[in-house]
Length: 142
Image (cartoon, rainbow, N blue to C red; front, side, top):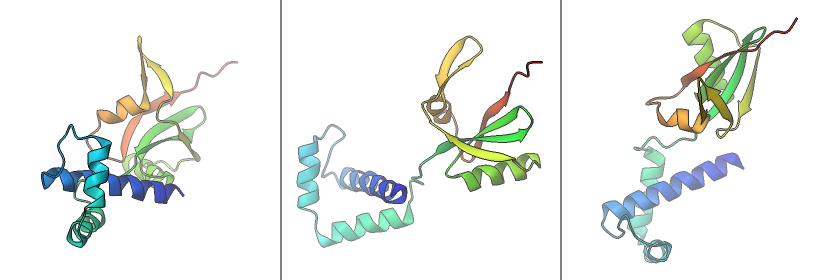
């Protein structure tokens, strides 16, 4: 199901990209104009959009954030497409075998210093993925 949603999102992105690049839509076009362009799409248009989806020149991919336990009370947060990519990133970058891996919501709120942010806001500042979001040391109470 998730893969179907991801593929549908990529298809919409490339449909918009195609119609914008062929000047059939403008950046301020309405949904009605998009629907009209899609209804009037030729077989050639459909093949061109399918080729864009397949070749993925914009490198469209869904990014998630994962918490990986790296030792007692210490966690690494990694932006990646899936849990395997996150675990592989920690193994290769830090030489650590993660003990577990859980996905977190991108809109999870947190404080860094004296400000609040979310993983989604942090991901916007990244240029490539997978990427380290940061480390967290859990306070140990005795």
